[in-house]
Image (cartoon, rainbow, N blue to C red; front, side):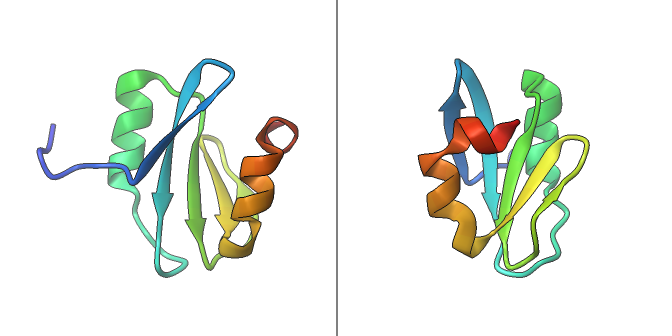
Amino acid sequence: KNSSAEVDYLIELKGTIIPMEIKSGSIGHMRSMHMFIEKYQSEIGVKISMDRFHKGDKVLSLPLYAIEAFLARRDALWQ
């Protein structure tokens, strides 16, 4: 739809590609992530920022300090 739309990272979890966006602040529209989720029918995306933990309908928000734990234990955290 928009040639400038991009997600920051993609990770694989149980055979599913998960889009990740890194935001410098706690606010961000994440248009690219939502476009990716819609186009590729991803179950969820991950936003990493200074914001607190939050799980919305399609986006899991993680604070910066939780990245290592998420990547190490992503199967457990995803549930």
